[in-house]
Image (cartoon, rainbow, N blue to C red; front, side, top):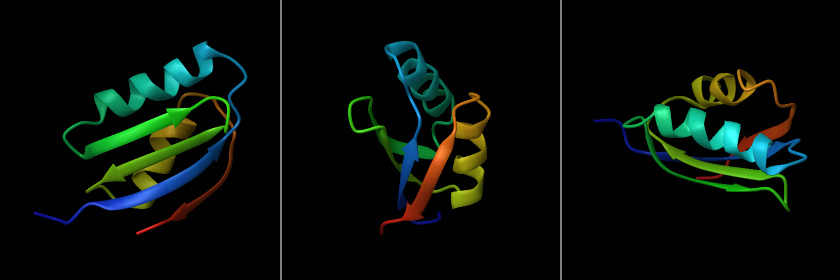
Length: 74
């Protein structure tokens, strides 16, 4: 079992519909996604996942939201 990594993304979200779309895609990504938080005010998405960074990035991009930046935190 791969150990989980934490990724932080700056995602352009303008409304609760936007953050809801990101939430839904991460919910569907379980069990690869261990935990996540979507903060509309900070435009920040933090994901703890056993999947590679690129895979999570692609899932978020599929929502149509602009991912301004992202990084591996831990």
